[in-house]
Image (cartoon, rainbow, N blue to C red; front, side, top):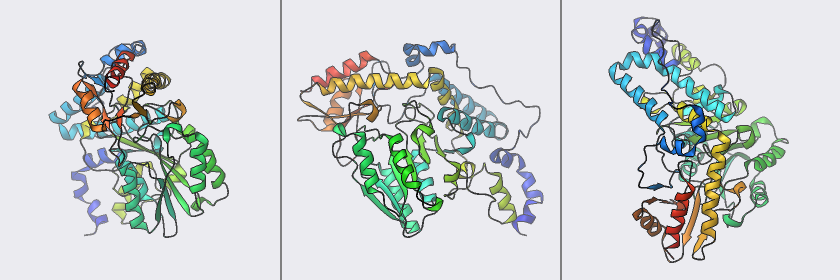
Length: 444
């Protein structure tokens, strides 16, 4: 019995409901209405009050949490969504999965698309930035003679994904130094170095929007314009695909994908966006998706399910739906729709302004201390929410340890050259920044 014969028999019927839920078909139980989303409680006008924003988080009040870049606490609306889904899964897992799984997956894509200013059909759902990077870079249809270009400043997940992709495809991988001193660099220097590094065989340009190593934010619009000029002279199959690890800009900057100008944008939702742990997105231009192939089977793509039954390749080019990994997950942690709504409720522009205001206060305070070396640019055009610094006579680990003893939560950068790191976000206040600055000043 071949697969096609099996699928037309009773085997598929036995699991039709579950497959429908995975594939994205309508509610299999007519008469059961999807649940209402969790209440967000207070009127939206409350979101204009930063004290209200802070009150939505269950963070310890005796600590100053300056580590938003690592893993976030959930606001109340996200906690309620997770708890509600977990309760219903435990009470009636199969029926609830059939009834709610597809609706919620679509809901996340729609809310992410609103936030990014794109089409929901071009948004893929992943588990993290790392998964998104691996899926895109290892999915590219590359061949020997083509090159992937990145910088020495990228994080492990980018470097390792590219290394594995190079080994698999025969394409080459090259890393370049983008800046020597991020605290004094300029937009012109960054763009010039990227343009100088590009070659006629460069197919993939893999960049990081905000460097977790120094806090440097790349001038993506200027980079995009420079790459576009080069691409104008190339055929579609040879154009440079501009790819961006955007996790430390998502939830901080008030931009849309058109502002960045990239072909692919990969980010987790569990940092500055304050979304559920284990959620991430990949956005790609429709033409760019066609340059990839999926690694993990999708449960959302009808063409893939049909092809499985006919033992043929799925019809049509790769798209975001086909690139969304399937499989059974920690479903209660998968839904980031409420996190996108929370930011929209506050206002993207207000989130960006607040984050930059707190970071400017921190950077200017650190820069004024003779015993402190600030490694993050003072310019808001070249920085976001990450502030990296060093203290004369202190190791980064000792700085972080001393601050934590005073209930100020800092981190170190996980790179060969490490710095201490503070990352103010919308959960913080100017008074907390002043307290952190006094603690650093006492380390003279």
